[in-house]
Image (cartoon, rainbow, N blue to C red; front, top):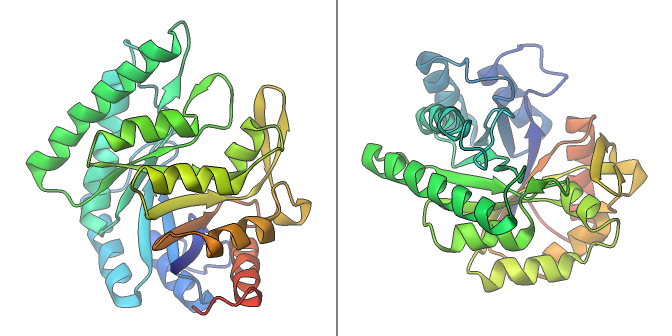
Length: 270
């Protein structure tokens, strides 16, 4: 199994506060990937995206993109603007050679779960057509939810992705831990993913504080909510071919390096 571990955004220790500089710092740290964060909007120009792609090619650091948070494919009044933000993220991702464009699909709001599923499914089909027409080599990464009010259970995400070749499930282990109220069965989750035909996946990891409504805030890995070593053992025992784990901890590079050490302790050779 190929395992990549990286940071959500530019590492804090990067002297050069730019995406290309962050990529080079990830390489210096001995990590393998970086997720470019467009959380407040897609402000990156095409020239910088191409420069980031060059840095990725030179270093071998694998890139992904997190689309803006202001997305709700379950709201008829917001779906078109949401699609534009995702498509803009896909375009920049294509230019920088990123494989996965991660986004939170939306909130149920007044819709039933069935109605929300249909809206997200249709929105993804329309975006997939744009991706195909432009020949962009990117995947729409639908992230598992951390709140009960949000669309994105593991079954909902897999239901969308199985029917669309341009979609990929993104496993956020902290979100899953919150949704399952601390009773996360990582083997069951991976079994569902692999049974659905996905053996190369993208993932997020951090620890999390949660309530009965779901996630509250991200925590560093020392809290063991969930325990990374337990999840890592499950991953290593699975039939996955590849997993890219992006650390979303408040100490993104420190905990990313910790995850790498845990994997090495368990016998994985990078």
